[in-house]
Picture 1: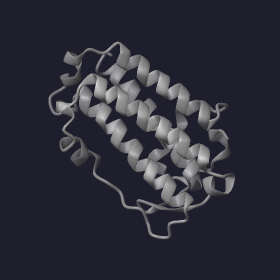
Picture 2: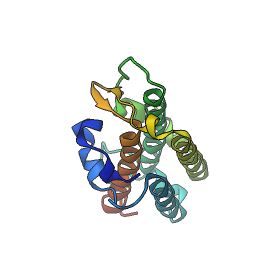
Picture 3: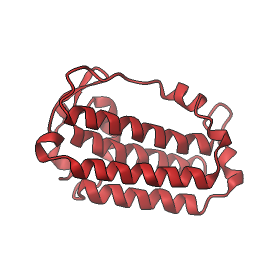
Picture 4: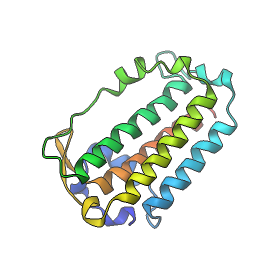
Length: 173
């Protein structure tokens, strides 16, 4: 399955920018692995001192960005699982700013953030591998809009790519 197989009706238009940056011909399983390599490569070249860097006052630190990636991936795992299991209730949104403020990222080591991201991503990959085609296309409500697990998978990758670009361009990593 690749991103060209999903339609705009499978996700909130808020996520369009994440969907647009996904390589069109690459399968979701490969994208999860390639994206993990991208993050791992960035983290290999990072120092502990860089974790507290903010490119501008009021912006997240590098550690907060990394914790945000982990938190959001876990939330999207839950959402994908819920929709695949035909949850009938609308899944709630969340305030990513509050999550970042309350994450405790400033107390994390580079090693712990790297290991946790890798484990969470591998868990995501296993979760999506467990879904049948029918589960992947099951539609439900997520934060007031229709969504499918397969669209959520591509959103996960696109969200990570989005923040990698910010880390490279604004944080100069």
